Image (cartoon, rainbow, N blue to C red):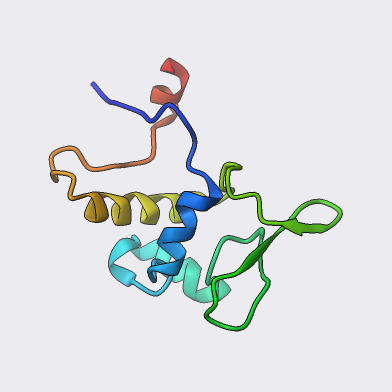
Length: 113
């Protein structure tokens, strides 16, 4: 048994993870994910571009041909490591019981949706 959100995580929802230090908090990341984040020096999702002074958490969205204003209601585009870290942060933030933490769906679960 599992439950899944009806909607994908948006850029706006993910922004809270970024602005609250999710990319600076090792505890949210698996070992491989933290190593990847450090190696790439990733501070926010790859398709987000800083649009303000350092630390302001103002972003634009990089598309195929241009940077556009951030579309906060569009689904966020992140990799598996980032998604796992977000789930761990979200579980802690919402106070979800450890018996039912947020997590990334398996492929088999995804096909059942």
